[in-house]
Amino acid sequence: MSSSKIKTGDLIEVRKGKFKGQRGKVLRVEDCGHQRRLYIQNLTQKKCVKRNPQQEQPGGIIDIEAPIAISNVALVNPVSQKLEKRVGFKLLDNGKKVRFGKSSQTVLDATA
Image (cartoon, rainbow, N blue to C red; front, side, top):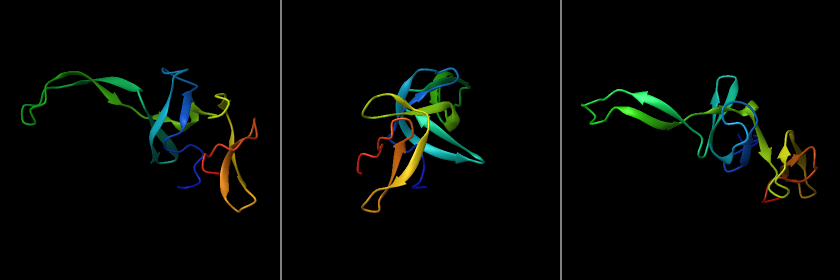
């Protein structure tokens, strides 16, 4: 999965849904059937759990990491801190494939 448009460690902003406007780093990317889902740092949801005495787990309301669809987020340009709604790929002169923001035409990969 080296040619993914959003990778682990990227800074993103949520564009739709309950967490709209929040920014965070991508913790991991998962393939769920036909769409990718992201786990974002500090984006948690509440979940009610029953007490489980066999595992010594208390009941109550806990915070869990919940995935968000990749279509609901936009990549933040590390240089200008503006949103890159579209990301593309191009080859550099040395033959290395890098990601770039289509609106700003700047290279997004730091190791380029």
